[in-house]
Length: 343
Ligand code: HEM
Ligand SMILES: *[C@@H]1O[C@H](CO)[C@@H](O)[C@H](O)[C@H]1NC(C)=O
Ligand SMILES: *[C@@H]1O[C@H](CO)[C@@H](O)[C@H](O)[C@H]1NC(C)=O
Ligand SMILES: *[C@@H]1O[C@H](CO)[C@@H](O)[C@H](O)[C@H]1NC(C)=O
Ligand SMILES: *[C@@H]1O[C@H](CO)[C@@H](O)[C@H](O)[C@H]1NC(C)=O
Picture 1 (tube, rainbow, N blue to C red):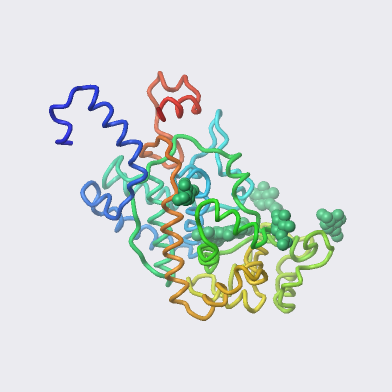
Picture 2 (cartoon, rainbow, N blue to C red):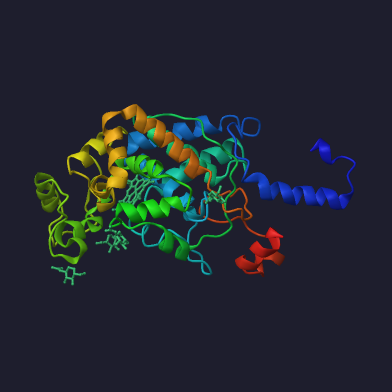
């Protein structure tokens, strides 16, 4: 700030525009140490309460980081509710009837707004809360980089086009992650997030009864595990019924990888990581050495957390809605607004 003293007016204007544009690319630990020193303590506290109230909810919140960061960067776009003029991401193919526990983020935001109004972005809340979900369920704890801004818009179509299906095979997942400069090791480690939480019968019916249109189950299933899943998800089941993603769904550990080695992966996208030679050795490594898994997971979460769109942003007061805009901007389409801000 003191640097701008004595500058001509037009230069101050330029400096401010530039700082908005780069804010997203210089994420750093301790971003809120002056403006909201209690931020990380507050987030963890709300997450602890969520864990006690409903253990699965912290897994559900952790999943937000993936569904947020892969669609136009980590900008909390997936938290925006639909509006009369904008289809949000909550009803996108991979999210509808599936993403849950949005109320936990609301509670975090409310607590932060009380302590330091207008300071901590919803995008950073997702990053902190995801880390906390892992740490609170027995996984590693790490320092996160902060300073993200919240998007002004969401994009349902982008989410539909980007987010992978539970039917995906390892080679298509490798290709997808590669687009974000995430390695094969990152892919396998980040899939280890399925060490906690649950999935719906909807996500595995094809695998149980008609894998790749063969009319047969996925041959990669351990037969006993397949029978368990057939009992959970018979053909006429309410497909919202849920099953555990690994055999210890409340503990963040490497059991997920041991389960994959035993043919007991829940999703096709999980089991495929052991079926394909390109990913199999990482599954084996993580199944034997939990510390290797934890180290790679942290690294993957940090890399995924750095994805940014470079578009203009703000700190939302309510994570579900963009802040009210000045009247002259309301008349412009979001697309136009983006262009004019990018210049
Ligand atoms: C590699 C590609 C991935 C695919 C195809 C995938 C797919 C899925 C699917 C289909 C479900 C169950 C949804 C349902 O049936 O309603 C699920 C749950 C979950 N996913 Fe993923 N996922 C992937 C990667 C990730 C990543 C990178 C993370 C986080 C770092 C993550 C975190 C979670 C969590 C925690 C759950 C459980 C949520 C709950 O219990 O509510 N997933 N995922
Ligand atoms: C993997 O999935 C992709 C996309 O569905 C498909 O085109 C490809 O043939 C599959 N690869 C293998 C080896 O099964
Ligand atoms: C991946 O890395 C390349 C080369 O460093 C860079 O040009 C590109 O922007 C990166 N992509 C993403 C999504 O970060
Ligand atoms: C299995 O899938 C194929 C291809 O999608 C379809 O033609 C066939 O009718 C399905 N079979 C059953 C039993 O649902
Ligand atoms: C799951 O529940 C939702 C909301 O109650 C309903 O709209 C949807 O059709 C159900 N999905 C399946 C696959 O049965």
